[in-house]
Structure formats: structure tokens, C-alpha cells
Image (cartoon, rainbow, N blue to C red; front, side):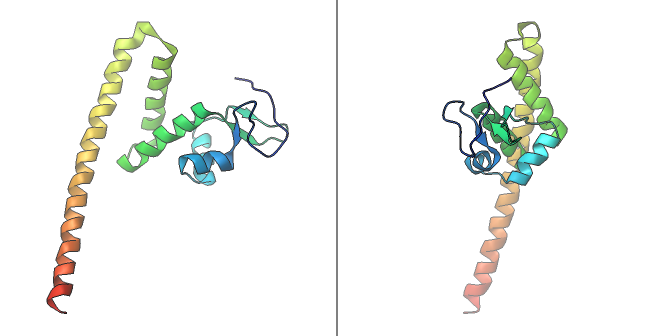
Length: 141
């Protein structure tokens, strides 16, 4: 998608685009991480400025937020790419494959729920350990 080019170093109020630094700040990722996700083909900047700076639109930030939520659940880059493609196809209204896409999306939901439960168990174990250490501190004070 071609967008009007910007020449200033600030967010484009007219175009709705922002440079990578602002995008990183808004989604809570580092610039390096965003560049990595671009190299992996997960998010492509909506446009480039005349000076070659990456310019991101709100839709790009939405993709980055999905990726950011998948990362702590241990999804691979390929899995992230697959989910993003499913979401893109559903948004485009590809009705012929809609049932297949929804089935694939449901599989991601199940996988995410399973991984969340595993993280809850890890957290419970970690909290138990922290309580145990605190008990030792209290016992020896």
C-alpha cells in the first residue's frame, strides 16, 4: 500500500504514519526487535519516508501487538506468521476458506490456552518457592 511520503522526522498527522521509534514506544518493543520481526517477514512497514525511514500505520502496530502477546507463550516465528496470515485472510473476507480459517484459528486458541495454563503452573511453583525462602528468612530473624 503506497502512502504519501513524509519528509519530517515527526509522526505524520496527515498520513497517520510514525517512525520506528514511536512505533516501538507505543507497543512496548525495542527498535531492534521490530527490525527483527520485519526481517522475519512478520510486519512490513506501511511506507517509507523520502529519506528511507520506516513508517508504521496503526495496522502495523496491531500486528506487533499480536506478536508481542504470542512471544511469552513460546510461539515460533513460523507460528506467528501462520496466525497473522489467518487473521489477514479473515479480515479480507475470504469466505470460501472461512471454515478452514476458523478451524485453524481455533487451534491457535487451544494452543494459547494450554500454554497459559502451563505458565500458571510455573508461576504457582515460583510463588511457592518465594514463600519458602521468606519463611526461612522469618525463621532466622
